[in-house]
Image (cartoon, rainbow, N blue to C red; front, side):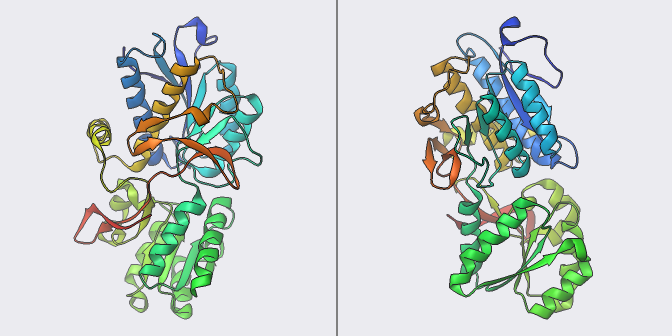
Length: 373
């Protein structure tokens, strides 16, 4: 049997066509980060193909029912409503934290299991829920590791070019500020809504910042800011960072070339992949025609975990408050188990491996591991 992916509404409920259906929430069009969405979907599709090649779930093939969220929380919530009505056994995916939060709230309200692949915002749900779990490490975990890298590299005066209309960016800036302050670090916000790339440079120079972190969208204004900083002689020693992971994708290197190198970012991969990870990396590279990002591995692991749960519990949403606690699955990046974590309302894998990585200035196509956590 082979994987099945559709973006059309399938008629009737799951029982009418014999498939066990998993709803996939993915940003595939702008303003969503469509490159990340493409990698996320590739990982999920590959896992579906492998599940079906191994006999499916109780002899029934798995089908992904894909919905494009386009980074729109309202669109994601509506997609959850629609997919629940179609009788999906579970929901998987989503990359953007704010969008995932909207999807998680609807999944919780409707009683549909949702395994979030990539979103990191700590407060994915306002209240603890038995219906939602997450693979990606919480933002407070990953961004503290990033702050440790800044400190180890000698950076104490940090500026952040930030879009404060996003709760994700605001949350990230707060985590950095709280973690750096006890070590003598300071964080200055530069509101990009009121700034040009040139005025960002002026602020950096005036504040004598040694590092600028991009808490903004890509390609703009991130690309314009990077180019301006790289060309400003006053800022020759300033490190540019992008903790959210923009440089992971080839679009960054295509847009910026050599200017996009030496920009540290977070990614969620181990220093060395095991046999499963290596095999999936090869398959993903063939599927994507480029090196797979960590997001593609997240997609694969998400469907793999859900398929294992559906095999053990049946595809009819026979979820209990402890269902996630029973998971012990071999993922591409290690063994996956879920637990309850203080101040996080969803079941959480504690933790996916975390690295701080950049593109090598001598070869921007090569990634260098700078720090692990």
